Length: 372
Ligand SMILES: Cc1cc2nc3c(=O)[nH]c(=O)nc-3n(C[C@H](O)[C@H](O)[C@H](O)COP(=O)(O)OP(=O)(O)OC[C@H]3O[C@@H](n4cnc5c(N)ncnc54)[C@H](O)[C@@H]3O)c2cc1C
Image (cartoon, rainbow, N blue to C red; front, side, top):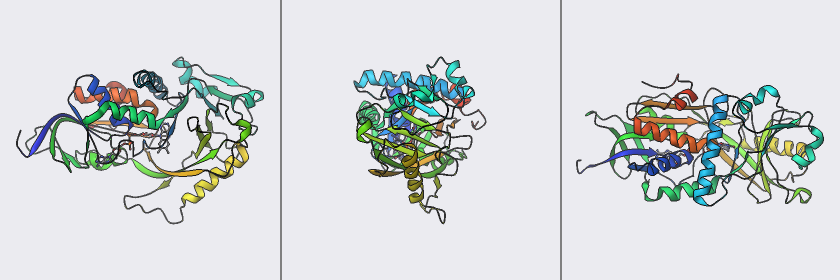
């Protein structure tokens, strides 16, 4: 090792939920791993208080990953001594038998409840036509508690540094990581840098079609009638109240977050932060408020707060997940990945130790974008 550089075995770029889960898995295997993040852990896509854990996905392999994710969260709960996924369950409107094939295949408990039972299942809701699908093992992920447990376990393996670039050096020895702190050489680098994955992974030749979009999440106070009742996570695909939405309780704060789902809702923005002419986050907030006013009378439709978040999207559906690998580097990107973090952390750790994509990750990305 020269004086000018530091040699390490594995570098993980990003202390979001995926990077931290990878570091945790590697640390438990006794690997030598350093995690880089320029900001406080959990400041990126993993920020905020709540995420939905749900088993249902359109693709059967994503259901399988969710099942493993749930088991991984249970293990994290045992180690941390904290509840990380509540027992609220998830309820979906607008689903039919074809939508639960993956659940059935993987033995995930679920049932269709007649609309007559709606008040008992989801007491803040206006009447919804058709049965509600119930996923009782789902619930609201305590995102902040999860990040704080993982960051605690990672401890001083986290180095606060911005990564400028990841490149294969001319001498072919390892992978070079240019940071604000030092020049590192790693045997393997895992790029789990959220919105920055395409930029950093371009240095080793990946062309990653990840788009960043702004997404508005107003949250609402639960009215007195329903206060204290357990409210499930919510997915409304019917459009009967003018929008398709998701919703989630924020722990036991008495607040409930609602966001729009659909291809036209989130606002693309470029690296310079400019929004397309005529687009407005206010419009998104207004649409959510109008939905809540009509469809969720148990919530006070005057939001108590609004977060504007960045979402990432890959081509291939709202639950898309892909991993890329080349000699010495693995990169990961996708959309709704918080719920799968424990299993993705294990798989990314495998890829760093074995220098190849484990089959499940290659499959999750349909294989087509796996480099070399
Ligand atoms: C509004 C919203 C709602 C969501 N809802 C759900 C849901 O209900 N269920 C679900 O499962 N998932 C959901 N997701 C998705 C989920 O939150 C993300 O898939 C997940 O958090 C991604 O984690 P990550 O570790 O890949 O990225 P991040 O959390 O973004 O972590 C990447 C880290 O890399 C760091 N970084 C980036 N560039 C550099 C650099 N150059 N140098 C050093 N560090 C760098 C960043 O600071 C950041 O901390 C939602 C996301 C959003 C935004």
